Length: 100
Image (tube, rainbow, N blue to C red; front, top):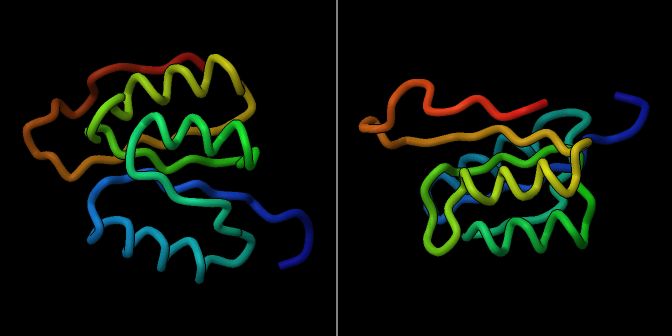
């Protein structure tokens, strides 16, 4: 693939999910891993320092959770796309729609 790469941050506290997400990002043409975080606070700081295009964010993490971190990222960096992910089957299918 030619053209600019999509710089991706993966934020999740689960080592199993993190490994799977990293595998997908590293083998997907056009994607470049920009960094990893294991908490909402780390994700916000990483977005500030590396300027990704896309964040794959777990909903539930220690400290500042993924939902609040995503709201803060979208507020401060509106061009960053945040995709919320969870393996928690107790979460409602749609808990909240974030502003574009």
